[in-house]
Image 1: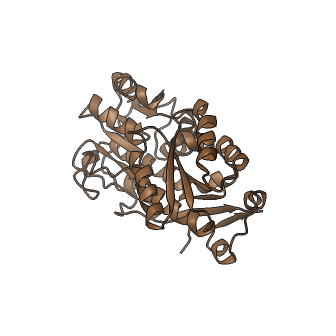
Image 2: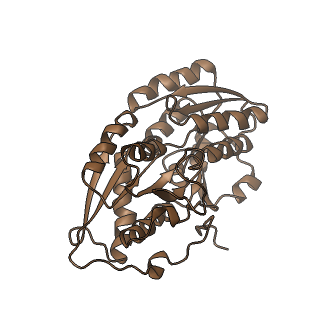
Image 3: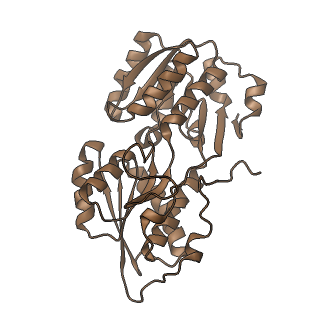
Length: 323
């Protein structure tokens, strides 16, 4: 089986091909896209708009798009702004955005692209197989992945006994940070948590890691950390910290380890949900999906700069080794 394949927790098949509803001639369909990261607007345009065009929804012809971008603290305001555009569907990135849109409207369909926490625990769905409300889409369960990354970091850098965790201030990423701490402590490691909500916080956070004598770093799943991967990798290298990051592509930015779902596939999937909803289907009847296979990259240039020797057996597990 291709390791890059994107599997579904609940298979839904060719969603749009099976849809009984057709586009209404002459109708303009409206999508609002809300996110805490400007970069995800580019990803939406790169991956989802072409998919929607393939299904017959073309921006500038029968599809209108508005984007609503801002820091997490602005999400309630941006959600109200998005709902005011009278969208047929809202595509929301991150838990904070999804919850804000749900608070702003209980009826407008919301496609998660994607949520990091369990949507059932967050009160957004009754079940993965049949959400039952206005919310569906893709759930990445980032907290579980943050724990897995802490374990991977220990495997690659077993001599490190004190692990730093870089995260946003609570309630942002609280579950992911807690899971990374739980796994690290189970492995007999000490942990320290450092907070950064914007790039201006990074220098102080890494200064704190030096003071704490941290020996390795887990960067918690977050769109802003992904956006700033090159900056964070440079600061980590200057601090002598091997780092594990959220996406395989972040290893190209200098992280020692990048581990996460197939990025392109994860971004394309919500387009099918959007298309199906635009054709008249109810979000509560569309199963929520999860990725089950992941991309794993290791940067040997970073390892060499840190003076690390990576076990051959560990390298054999990687999908990509950057030399």
